[in-house]
Length: 593
Image 1 (cartoon, helix red, strand yellow):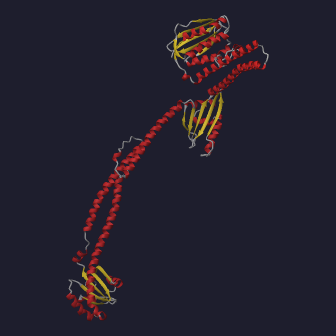
Image 2: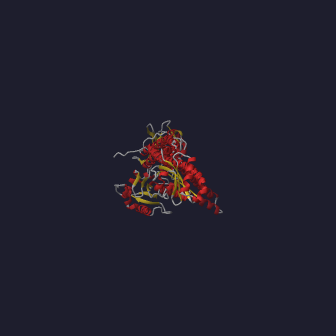
Image 3: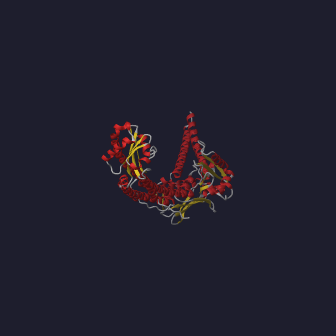
């Protein structure tokens, strides 16, 4: 249904003009009546002057006024002080007419006590009445009466004819002035309300477009330079800042959603009624693993028995909103199918909450390995330290210990200190590779030259064990890496073969393949090999196939762990296997860059 709509400035203009015209009409009426009354009072004053002069003339006779006595006196006075068409009447205080200049009707006049001007004169001393018809003459008069000496009333009257009406008529110049002023103010009001209406219309259009999220192009200069224009400009500037903030928040929201979707933790955000706000894929995946079946809806997570403590915590917080100092965070740990999950719930101020699920299986395993490593390090350090302490204690506490015995004990202390130094060095190398791989310097390394150097350094040990080192590396084989760590790879593999492979064997080192990115190496011996159950654990720190024999030989138990970490640091992989013809073979890769 169509609804008639009047613009704001027209409503304002009509309202103001209605009030103004009502005021102008009231003022005009008041002024007009006031002008008429002023003219009437002025005429009354003139007649009162005539009455006063007549009273002065009659004053000597005031105590003996009678019809017979007053008539000749007043007739003579009126003739001497003639005013055209003036009618004079003398009335006693009881209303009796004792003289009237209209001689013909004096005998038919009734008591005048009820006349308006007479009543007013008796009450206030003077009185007048406008436009009243005489009962005796039938002529309409303007009457003016005065009460003298509390004895008689002198009343003068002029016919209410055209001349008198013209004299009593109000001056119309102030009427025209009022009309012209009204027209001028109407134009001013219309101009003002029109400008005001334009500002309001622009502000209204701005509000409608803002409400519909439509593009807004409002010039701040188009508003009037007044308080409303200033307020409008501030509103638009505030809106623009809010719109920019909204856009920034929207971008940050999209970033947050993207981050949550690729996050490595499952995250679900819910409102106070447990309705989903935002849930990433990992949250659904981890929830399905914990519940042992696929959840049809995200809200079904609150029915998982393993999450009962979290659900109770949420329900308790909903029953007591704004719980003051009450705990707003709860975390539990769930073990499921060999995996460990940390579930944490945080309640926000508006009673919404988030649940995060983290798979901490790897962290727990790393923590276990760190604890085991610490225990192994302590155990490995304890053996040489205890040996050194025992030998030195024997030397110190035995007074007559033969010199050759002392020398033997000191040589053993020296050997144990070398073992301790090697152990600490290997631990330092592993720690550096684990904690600060980015700080390891890389440069061009000739691997073939490194192997030739190792062959020269271990020549005596190889000869003692009757081991033949077969170097099938090319003359020059360069890669980008750390010289010290690449040296450690091949030196530890060589030392491991010398220590554990046996005597009278061959050790072969070769690069059997290369592509655009990697070199492929083989380090094989023809020795005793290892049992298959040990192959997967050879690279564990402090793992020993034969613990008693290894410690007797003097190894640190970290050589192959260093090899694996150095290979990984150079972008490669390493594995071990038993050869069909006997012996152990290590196959590994090193990245060219």
